[in-house]
Length: 348
Image 1 (cartoon, rainbow, N blue to C red):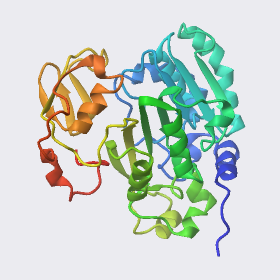
Image 2 (image 1 turned 120 degrees about the horizontal axis):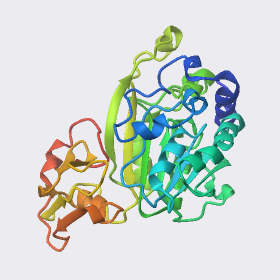
Image 3 (image 1 turned 90 degrees about the vertical axis):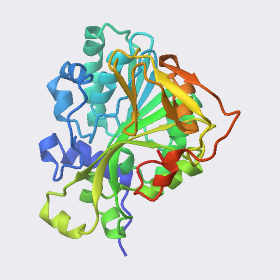
């Protein structure tokens, strides 16, 4: 019987002692598959090399409309995403970074004063805390205190993913958003791989099985989530590839909202939404998800869930919404696509 790996200890050791820079990784699972969106690139370019070279994320999980928001970055590492977010939340927003690895936090904390001065932000605009993601209360995060939770290839490292997601739901305000990138797998991994320190450290051993992820969200009151992107990952290390043969790994970016009115199917209430074009980083088109791209000024039919993701969140000021849920017309047309592989928690 395989000994159970201490995920917290292994993650801290792997990213504190084993891995010193991105090139030390044995696979590309903890590396971005694609480049950041254009609106993020200038902000990332302002960060010191020491922060960037120790970055181990697999995506760019920062959504639009960050101004004035409180952003929680789980597994912040040296602070690449946290410092990037700080430039967009501005002087009225806050960023909180949480990580378990002392050496990573030391880098983030050391650079914080100079970067905040450069960004013309108050000294308390960003803070970094040491803690585990399954117990955010231990670092003083209260119920419904955060607008946006982000994480970059870190939730897979948690030993108790259900508890970590429950903590995220707890600290999110109503209408708040979880927007994160992580590694997903086509099946549950065998015990030997789940408890292998290298597989775990390389973000493969704890990869989410898609259906388990869907079930966890649903059980916590989030029956619909949206997949913003998903790209296959190749396991370059020959011995690791041989041991994991038959398992397909993907890097994916997910958005999920804490909205009480979400349903487990896309229902039709005859609603229309029109994007006003008022988000500076995306004046022509707003993408709720790849299936919902709203062109400025063009009304679009949406299901009740998609309407709620706009009308009951920080995006509301940027849209005109016609209709409510007073009249029901059955399932929204995209329900016919439910037989396709999982791309969201619902049908759109």
